[in-house]
Image (cartoon, rainbow, N blue to C red; front, side, top):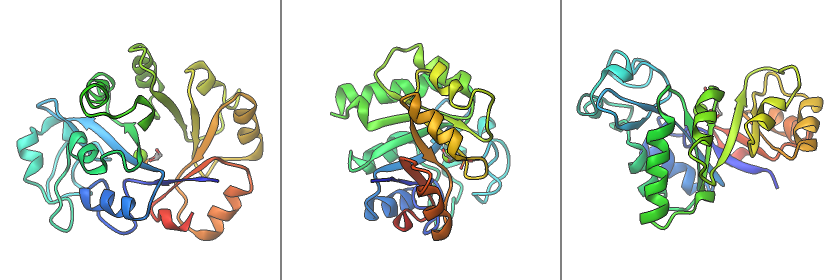
Length: 226
Ligand code: G3P
Ligand code: MG
């Protein structure tokens, strides 16, 4: 079975990376919820995709330059707020696994601290998490904490050596974009013992095409289409 990964929740149905979107993803019974995190000025780990708040909220400016109190006041769509990573974990409450995509730099350690706390105090399993990033140096740093957490290397192209970058990171999975995925890449990843999770597929015809390559999981804004 191909794993169904709700992209930014189920952002085809609700404002991306909001509690409403994560609720919708849970309702659709996703295997994984994907969300994007960054650290704001006051060091909380907040769930938002862009470096600036402009596209997804009624505010303006860089996330890294805003306090959490400022971010909390912004409307992220349909009256939703920018959530803290902890708020999303509390909502999910182990009903799905969580793929935390590290967007900003300096986020690996604070994300690790939160995961550790949820494992030690909230009865979560290390296995309930998958940490991914386009920034493979953040993943390398995450590895240095020696936690038994799965790592996913995101790529947006076909690198020389195919899945080699993920192997080097001792990753669990490779996350290629739909624009660049091909059979050679999928086969090389599988040969190297990696899972392949492709992003972001929203059209049914595209989803069927990608499934034929033998991928193990698909990110979608409409996870019920997978
Ligand atoms: O993690 C898969 C996908 O979310 C990566 O791209 O830009 O949607 O975060 P983006
Ligand atoms: Mg993402």
